[in-house]
Picture 1 (cartoon, helix red, strand yellow):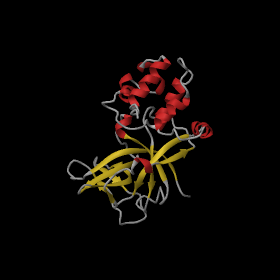
Picture 2 (cartoon, helix red, strand yellow):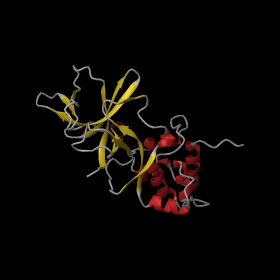
Picture 3 (cartoon, rainbow, N blue to C red):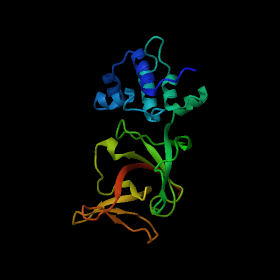
Picture 4 (tube, rainbow, N blue to C red):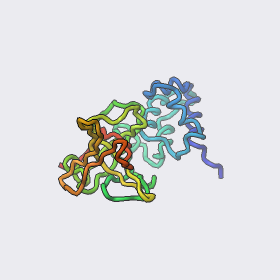
Length: 238
């Protein structure tokens, strides 16, 4: 049985069939430079078994109908790992904004993995259109517990982008995804980012439960907290 081609090779073949340069695709997809897109076609850099779904949807718009034979939307969307969907489902999918819920955020719960296994990720539909941070992949997390219940009750979902993908640092009032590591395990939680008059940085839980305390993360605190993601939207229980 022939081994399936890697995602980068399949993507490169489709781009070349469409007659598009990397620079053209990168610009159309919202990247500032061709190198930001190039990694998806480099097997040494991109080793995942699927493309991010938001990127696949953008590339489907860019590639579709070009080349000989013309590239079909389904050929691009299949690179996001959704080849089992029916034509009607693909049409419906293309009409919505779909991201993946990749895990849960819950203070004081320590897990061996930040994310669920890939086959447990859940498709998550969002109704708002957010054009900020073009090219940055969005993910969702399910909120568990009461550590941030003043804003996001238990069972809510938050949508976030990674700070490493958006070329900016946390700012006053940002609601952020925080990772803390201990003994080989990680806590994932949601906090509000604040700086006080003394320029100390705090991560505030915004919780009705006083057991959840703020964290200080200045250079003298010795905190193991990493401000990982910026929350850009939510779906919550009212």
